[in-house]
Length: 450
Image (cartoon, rainbow, N blue to C red; front, side, top):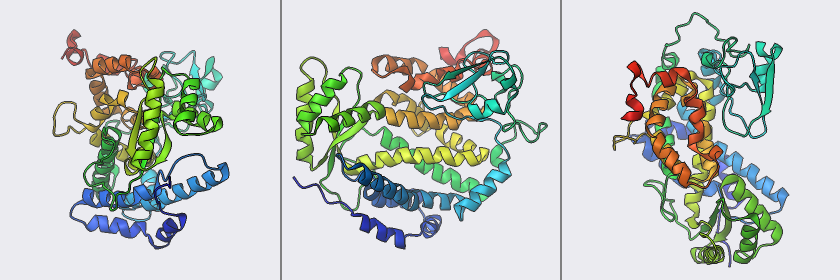
């Protein structure tokens, strides 16, 4: 079977030559319906850039393709967002924002698996309070009795959090520039009014886009406004991870289902285990359904079958970009506490359905339905945003506590490890005295008992 047609590198190269992110941002600024214009842009370019085909390519060619993809993604998708947000050239605008906001009072570095962490035996409020290497070496705690461990992934550096340390809460890099500065000052007030307005608009659109795509349950349709201009008969046979089937079972099944070598099957299985899902076949709908049928039949004899879906290529592309967009949001808010505060406001703003309808609520309540890669990305964004803003950390803690019974029930039914569950954030909330004590005014418990 011939693979569906796709844009050759030369087609995207032509776009590189003619595309101007500044001009695109200017059109967005002048349009009457910003969400419609942004969605139209994403509908045109996302499927052309991301997830073009599947299978095993030579390592060198695969690396070149990834480089082309990243360059196209930055120029055609992320650069217009930055030009719109900042109202001009991004590098200069971000530098001004960072200069105006001063040094960050909290580190918030999110730990990777195997990364060293440091805890002061003399000054830590409890054993969960840790520092990253950079903060530890720039802190007074390096002269104390300390404990070094390796992170299992997730969690973040507690430098700058006064509740995490008996003394020396901040390293030299995160000591507030003005010790007498009013701690409750709204960081949004330091932003230029035009940046405040544009950031609220674009953050709302991008976060809504990402949440819709990551919680989307249809396999052959897209949210309104994102259907590609030309719909192709191109699909992915997407295999999802579980903790029931062994590596050997998955490898053997893939060799039969997609007619691949053992080496290719091992690579597929490794990616599925690491990221939570992997495309194992790319082609027309019938071609992918054939592979799905073999996988389901081969793995359903002694246990529940492997989860496998036949998904339209445009949907997979948009889900991939949704993760890129969340990563972009996490990076852009590092330049300004004001931008971080606006993203927090957007995330916790109640939706039209009322209770549990904010974008953050929707992510949390759909956590167990997502694949590992999606969970990791949005968990990191929560840590970089809501848990790094003192005001919104309290508001998020209330939402988390109110939903905790349901989140814990979902986790019990889920077959993934705790480190991949939203409930793993409980250590960042239930160990913080000021957060927990605020739920029990006068000895009552209005949050957990409501």
